[in-house]
Each structure stands twice: as structure tokens, then as C-alpha cells.
Length: 206
Ligand SMILES: O=P(O)(O)OC[C@H]1O[C@H](OP(=O)(O)OP(=O)(O)O)[C@H](O)[C@@H]1O
Ligand SMILES: O=c1cc[nH]c(=O)[nH]1
Ligand SMILES: [Mg+2]
Image (cartoon, rainbow, N blue to C red; front, side, top):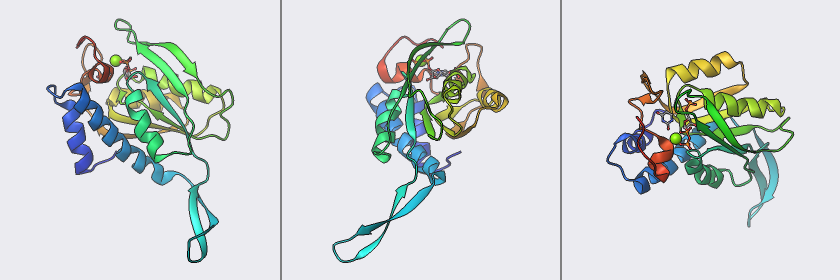
């Protein structure tokens, strides 16, 4: 978990219900930068020869830049900041919408390389609630041979974390908060509401 005062102030802005969509998106961009920065500590780096204007020396580059996969819609608001920190990365897309009665994810977009063996993947979705959406997304990746998944979330519910642990999928989670629980509509409490609607508009449903 990323525990830092600058992350906490952005998370506070996102939780506050009076925060307008523009400020919500700005806080999500900044918080994503911090979460990706922390997640990338674990990425292998390699040395290679470079020349400064003065002398030859060694530089550092990522050995294997991850594929970025924002989960639409809400993960779209994390895509730019992740790509800014990881300009060598490519991006795939998964579109999921949770059914409001069954709470199961409905897939409407899957734009991913066919073979992900040997490719680390960074999944971007601000919310881990029941875990159905992220389990679905990570299973798509594992079915394509991916064995190294990092999931970046703003908020995680204990129920969703437990589901991902039970899934046996090859993933680690980086988040800014583990909240208390889910309510009877499977929203995270205290949470921040619907992360898609708060960025892009829509009717409140909680
Ligand atoms: O853990 P779960 O119970 O599956 O819920 C989490 C999902 O819900 C939100 O997406 P949503 O389905 O609202 O779609 P949206 O991004 O288009 O708003 C969120 O971005 C996650 O993808
Ligand atoms: O609290 C929640 C749960 C699922 N999806 C959201 O956007 N928010
Ligand atoms: Mg939504």
C-alpha cells in the first residue's frame, strides 16, 4: 500500500463528494503518477553504455517495459499519467461494465496482444470492489500467457482483495487505501462513489 501524505491529499479530494469532475480527474492523474512510481520500484532495470557530452558512462533503462492496460471506463483516467512515466510502454484496452443487479462484469472491449508470454502487464483501474472486474481482466491476460501482472488501484475493498488472492492469478496489487467494506449495492465504503461517473458524468447509483 502506498502511504504518503501527497497521495493521501489526492485521495481525499477524490473522496469528497463536492469535488467537480475536472478536479477529480486531476487528482486521479497525480495519484496515478505516485502509484506507478511506487509500483515501478520492482521493475528490473539494465545498464547500457551511453555518452555524456564529457565522457562515456553507463545508463539505466527498464529491461522489459510493461504493457499498460487501462480498464474502461474508469481506468482511462489513469492511462496518460502511466504512459508519461513509462513512455516506452505499449497500451492495450479492456472494457468492462458491472451489471447493476448481478454485480458481474460485462465485457464490451478486448484489445490486447494475442501472446503475452514474457511481457509484464500493468493493469490500471481505480476501483477494486467485489473483484469481479479485475479478476476477469487478469484472467484474460493470464489466458494469453502473461505471468507477471501488477494491478494499480486507488481503492481496494477487503472482499475484492480476498477474491483476487483466491483466484491464484499471478498478480500483485498496489493501492492507496484498503477501505472498510462493501455496501449492499457493492460500492466501496467509505469509497468515492462511481469512479467512472465521477470522471465522465452519469447518474449516481449508490
Ligand atoms: O470489483 P468490481 O465489483 O467488479 O467493481 C469494480 C469495477 O467497477 C468500476 O467500473 P464500472 O463497472 O462502474 O464501469 P465504468 O468504469 O464504466 O464506470 C470500476 O472501475 C471497476 O472496473
Ligand atoms: O465503489 C465502487 C464500486 C465499484 N465501482 C466504482 O466505481 N465504485
Ligand atoms: Mg462505473
